[in-house]
Image (cartoon, rainbow, N blue to C red; front, top):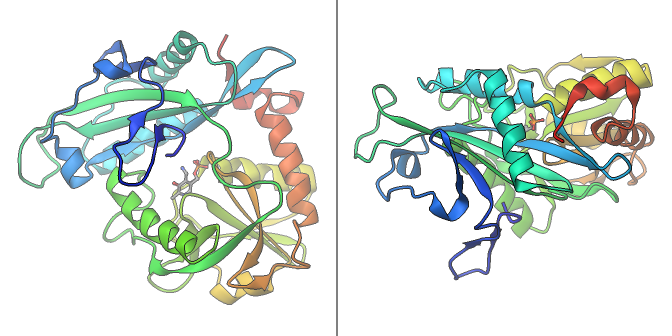
Length: 321
Ligand code: PMP
């Protein structure tokens, strides 16, 4: 991700936080002291699973709030199970390690946490079973991942989403992000901000790294977990907010491509993307071509909840300091 490294095309990327603390193989060490061998299995075969967690800074309270950490670590355990891996810590232990790491790095701004469990065998040969594993947690300061204010322009990708029968999308697997990268680069290089990918059978699945919601006839609709989506944690929070705060219905059902062109509002959501309104798909404006009214309202409610400004949602986060 661009926040972690300084990317000048054609030059070697350098970490922007070489001195930050990282949790690696059971110890807190400095970033530049982590050494991963050239033959590492995961580097060659994509055999790892990971999470992306945000911590939000509340300047008034001078406090950092770690969002939904237990839910992320439970998903990491589920991803690992699919990959025949074992997370070496319980969810509670992982949350405590993350809090300790954030405190050591002394962040006083929005931050990102990236746990990674990977096959560390330094050997040739593709398999999942019987290989040693390593675990690390990396953190960094983090701002916006995609545009959230004016709305983004999307295109339906020529790439299809990885099917559960080949590379399960419900597991957050390092290697499957090739699918996201193919779609994202195609979209950006064709002048759009983000890609929307369809399933093999042609239903709308999700964005390259975000879940998707549309509003049609006063009802929000989002693809079901059986349409090759990552079962997003933000998606689950947003479903709750739509029902409880907007008083609207949410349907989890398959969505046709042309529903993207005819809906009244559309947005993408995820830990990185937060709530990102879509104002155009394949050169067709969504609604009147501006950020939707309900989407805008949801953004406001979501941001006040994640920054721990709304007493109703204090249980979404854990205080770091
Ligand atoms: N889909 C994909 C493919 C993703 O990478 C992400 C980001 N983790 C999401 C959806 C959103 O998931 P979450 O809300 O749990 O971050």
